[in-house]
Length: 137
Image (cartoon, rainbow, N blue to C red):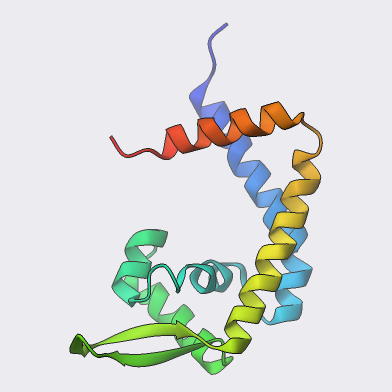
């Protein structure tokens, strides 16, 4: 029996969507929209707006809007990059770190609730498979 790649993609997308939807109330309580959460979660690893856009694969204009919202909410601040005074680096504030951590905990709790349906060895195998799928050729 052949595995339908489109069906697997669809199932994966549905799973991620269901988990994010279940976390919606927690994100809303934190004052975050879903896409703002993704930006907030990535700022430490990708502190430059263009880098964020590339990493998250979203338009630079969208990143600009999300960053503007996160700055207004007090979750992120812009700093001049000492290495290149023409660039701004994004830094999480203490409130931003707290919001990110709470949102990630909510996401982890909801996803773990679903992962509990499969055996620990299958979780390990799922992790191996996902890492293999993400590996750059």
